[in-house]
Every structure is written in structure tokens, then in C-alpha cells.
Amino acid sequence: MGNKINNNNNNINVPSLSSQSTIRRQNSTVKEVHITTDHVDGFYFSGERLTGTVKIPRSFLHRHSSSIKIRKPAESLHKRSLRSAIMMELVGDANYSTDLDPAADSDGHVTHKVNICRERCLVTISHIKTELDATVHASPSSESISLPIIPPPPIINGTFQLNIPDGLPPSLTNNRLPSVVYTLELSLSSSRCRYQIPITICPRGSIPHPMTSIELSDHAINRNDIHLRASILGNFYRPGEEISVRITYSNPQQRLIRSITVRLIQFYRIHNDENRLQIDGKEWIFDAVTILPQYEWTGEAHLHLFDQHLQTSYATHYVGTTQTIECEVQYRIIIELNEKKGDDIHLTLAPIEVTYQK
Image (cartoon, rainbow, N blue to C red; front, side, top):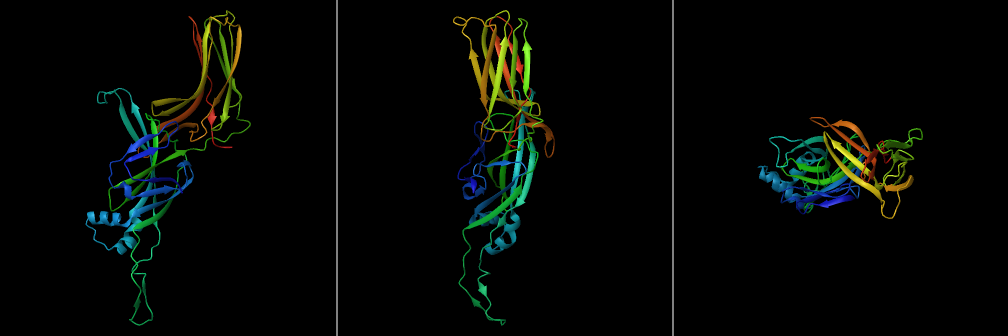
């Protein structure tokens, strides 16, 4: 089984696009609970089935039961309580900040958390031969033969499975807001403690079609008649693929051009809070001392999409269980031409579609 986390400390690393962030839980007993999922990297598509196992010390359950004045024998606890007392829950939360507010923090922002997913399932406890099972009746008479008592094992093993809902926004944990975080949380009815492991969820994306894959191009002209053009051959791309961007400019007045920069940017928006992450980029710098101003110029940039755990494009959706907010993920290519003592040009191509679909 994959995505195995032995909860032996209070720091939980969450998989992310470009870095890992930490969820901290103050719980001195988490070292006693183990949760394992079937995917090694903890990465799942929305709509997939997630399965896993749990390992819980029997003494741990009994201790918590005793703490709330439940005085049941271990056998009764196993047969009556465990099957309904242990729940696994997939929890998703979107976090974002809003603009200046008198009651805000020192930076003048208020942080909000909106629950976007809460999917529960029972943990099925593996059958264990116990003291009551060890009694064998030799005949219909009242006499019976008792076999040696087999003590219950110290570790209780369970399995669980749940279906991840379709339409969820992709995970984003980038050490800043906004963010979307998904966790699997184990809860026991005999305890207020909850035990977590992080998972990464991503939609599969749109299905490409020959009729929908089109060339993307655009152009812009500044006041000095510098004409900048950019184009890419298609609008559907998969994680790990290369995007070839062709860039040209015409410069009839032969003005001095300092540089041209092309960047592949991910835009992630939750409510009105937006984050920009540069996926890849390239820059051409023109030395005015050694290079004469050119009438025309052509260049090509080869930009690469991450090949692991990259979020797919996510058109604007309203999500939330108790309140709804907008979530959106876009990928855009931005080209900037910097003119010496002149008018810079900023050109943004239409969004590309990043998808895992074939």
C-alpha cells in the first residue's frame, strides 16, 4: 500500500505542486495510529475510489473508552463498538484571504476557510478469533469443552474505501494563500482525537478533440510601431509535455530593444484571492553595444509543464458544503518586450488547457 504515514510526530507534510507545507496537530498520541492508502504518492483523480488500511492499538481504544466511563470488556468493545465507532472522512478545505479590514491581522488581511468536501465511510474491522469463539460445544448436552483462551491481538486492523466526488478543485499547497488542502481523517467515537494524513486530488481535465485543438496567437503594437506577435500550435497539453512558443517582432524605426521575456504562468483563484506561479520561462537579452537594432527578429521558446502532480485547468466552479465560493485554475503564456527609453509591450495569449485525458 502507498502513501504510508506513521504518525509518530506532530508534523504532516502535504504534497504540493512546487513545495511542501506542514499541517501541525497538537496530539501526543498520534504515534499509536497508522493510516495507509493504496496509492504510493497519495495522488488521486476526482471520481476515483480510494482504499486503505488502519492499524490501531487495542489498548489505545480501551484507554479512550475508559476515559469516558465506558467499562466494557475488550470482547464487547470489539464486537459492539468498533464496527460503528471508527470512521474515515475525506475533508477538503479552501483557504483564502480578503482585502483590508479594520479587524484584520497585522498585514491587513482576513483569512477565511470554506469546507468544500466531507465524504465519510466506515472502517471495517478484520475478524479476530476471540475468547468466545474459543469455546467449542462437544455435544448438545450442557457439558462443553473449553479450548485455551486466545488473547486478542494488540493491534486492531481495519480497511476502508470511499469514492472521491467528481468536480472537486485541485489541491494547492504552496506555502501561501489561497490554498486547497485535502486530508483523510480517522475519528473514533470514544475519543475526540482525529488522526490525519494528506492526499492530493486533481480532476482529470477536459478531453481533447481534433476539432477543439486550435492554434493560439495574438499580437500588439506600441506607439513606436514595434509589432510583437506570438503563437503556439495547439491549446491542449498534458503534464510533462513541451509547449513551443514562436515569437516575432517587426521594428520599422529600428528602436533599441532591451529584452524579450516569455513566461508560462499558472493562475489559481479562490473567491477574489489569486496566486500566480511561474511554471517555466525564457528571456532574450539584447546588448545594445554589440548588437545593432534589428528591423525584424524571430525566436522560439520551449516551455515545459511539470510532469508530476500538476493541477489541470479548472474552469470557474462554485464549490462548498455550507457556503459556496468560486475556484478557478488557468494556464497562460505571457510575453513582454522591453524597449529602451520607449514603450514596453505586454502580450498574453488565450489560456491553454492542461489535462490528463488522452
